Image (cartoon, rainbow, N blue to C red; front, side, top):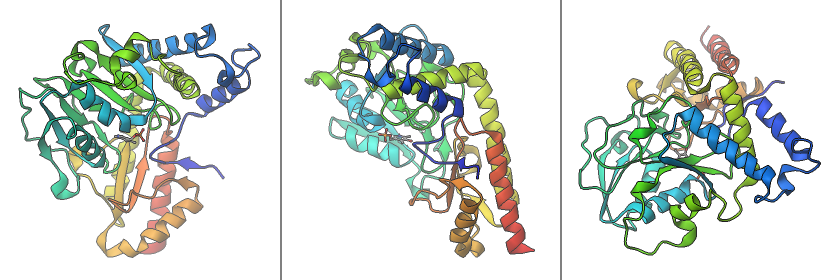
Length: 357
Ligand SMILES: *Cc1c(COP(=O)(O)O)cnc(C)c1O
């Protein structure tokens, strides 16, 4: 049976990306060696890293004064690396979900943290719009897509201080004005590649402004100076990211993805609104294009388990909602085809028919 992979992360990758990675695992470009067994300092891997960085910059239209790094440790290590490198006195954070909370917790170990606004009062069902960014903060941190709660910031804010964004789950899903950000980071495993690689897009003029000693591995300058090769980078995950970027370019880049992502979201949110069994959990103007969260309407709550089993029997994978929201979460990352979203909608309609007719 065909599987429709709605997992939140690690998550769906394009079939072609997986196939090309599998080929390179067996034999990279006919050199007679696996991409896993060559030196990261040799010319074959250097070519992979160079093309990955180049395509990353090209597809996101990254200005020349930014660096693109591939590190280990996940987005979670960035929660600590960011304040380590940037927080002198005070940092401002927008609290829009569990990942933002984790980032805030780490920053508190390095200085004062001002939470400019929070949607914790409504279980993070919206993006606060009424807040101001303090001009005396060292930086302002946002989570552009809240993977767990299914909300997303749909604009690039104007910030009076350097803006830092966790884009783990919406990087490459929509056009972004990179010049408005000082640092963008994320784990690769949502919209880019397998787990193991962390991307960082950084403008280096924000560095060198804190007094504290920064351990070598946690200092962004180390990785900028060494082109992400200070130590062994996550070679195989980086290779898969490269295959994703090649695939993305072939399909028309970020703007083509944005169009498809809006189309997929429209189809699924449309059905959630139409189908009397279901309702969405995020407020309409804050709804994510990447993680679509929904529950069963109150009077049908006891059917949730049955719907999940029904959907699973039809090939739907990874639909169970995060425990902090409950219900269901359909992640519709770039690699998810429109047909899979349509297949889920068909399952929702079929279940409605069984239960309500
Ligand atoms: C998944 C996720 C993280 C955590 O990423 P790790 O690579 O597991 O550390 C952080 N932020 C957001 C928005 C995420 O979706």
